[in-house]
Image: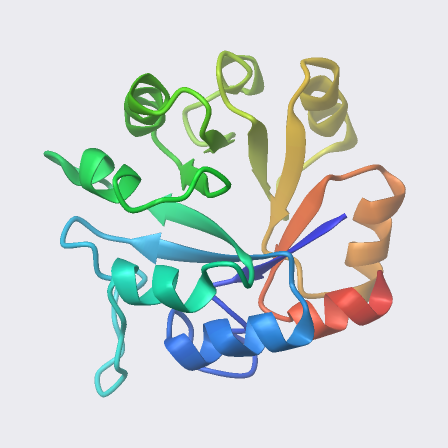
Amino acid sequence: MLVIAHRGASFDLPENTLPAFERAIEVGADYVEFDVHNDLSVTHDRPKRGVAYPTLDEVLDLCRNRIGVMIELKRPRGDTVKRTLERLDDDAVLVCFQRPPLEEARRLRPGLRTVQHVGFGVSIRRAAEGAWAAGFLNERVTRRGLATAQRLGLETLVYTVNDEARMLELQRVGVSGIFTDRPDLALREL
């Protein structure tokens, strides 16, 4: 099961910061996941004051050849998808809640893997029309939903899982990966 450091090792250090990403690398996570905005800054919805948030280029430079990256586009507009894709290696993964940005990404970079979050206006069946994986909210994922996604050929990723027992339960039902604020805990338990 893939261990995806949600906004870096964000239990230990401020999320979406270079130290949080460095910590995720140190503990051995498979991927770091982070949020990218239209100005290609790496922050979540409401940046905290006094925290030095990096740019997409800075994060990619830190991670290159050290850890996989999953980039979540936050309500992209204009040429944000294109500008983001220009910076990504072929092994990167693009994540989004909205379908149109992922469709644009697949048009521009057909081989790039994408994760379509489901359950918020996008069905599992729609996600299977081009995504590599379906992303499920931990509190809303069901065995039936996971089975449907797997039957349709999708990898299954669940976010955000920080409880040890839940990590093990998801592993038992064959989830492909989890997003977690605690990659060190996940790696130790799994």
